[in-house]
Image (cartoon, rainbow, N blue to C red):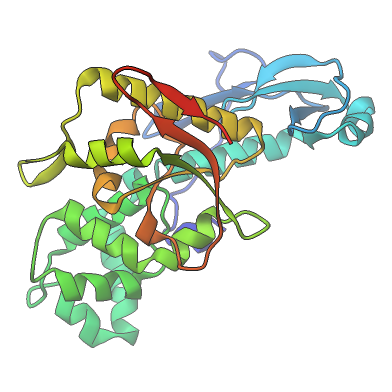
Length: 317
């Protein structure tokens, strides 16, 4: 399932008992380094407020491990009552599998080795030898190493790399103009607009978006600077701190409304530097450019961020 979703095959997952952990606790390790942890209550269910809860129920307070949202562990006898009252109820096995899957997605870029990239290239070469030959290899425009870095950038943003043909076609057209990996990644993202749109579209076909106040977005765009061939935000530190804080508040508000696919929508020039700035404080909030959304897709604003020197505000809609 992970290979179908993300386009790469994950390494072997090994399960082992660790007496150093507390009872019912677990850790997910990558190269033997803990990258995620959580707790499970056997024979109980995890109940989360979906935003439409009519009547609160009793349970053991906990935190949902993927998004960090407040939740309750409830007895199996309360499962039906919780569902009738509007709670989302999940069994412990599904809680763990979801946490493992999201952790793998979050660290997929670290798992993509040079050997994995070569296998992807060799597989595609059988069907499209001219395309592969034009883009990668001794006669191609880019090395396998550059392709690996582009694919890693996509995976780091949660973008699947299964559309390798579209990725290589975009590189074939633009690699002669630039070898900057960040620039190439942004170009490839535009060629994957259908994939990106489908990734963040909800069940009703809409995209929930946090947007910037136009004046503030213009201010951010005007602050862009070139440093070592990369675009960076030159906004004052206070503005950057306030932007982080308000983006976090907008994202939390969207989560509380049940908008777990909410994205931060912005100008294409801002996307990469904004994503880099928010990566540490808000790794779960996708940053998407306007032209990465397929024309005709309905976008529903769930928050507007505005930071001004005299009056800083965030409006939730």
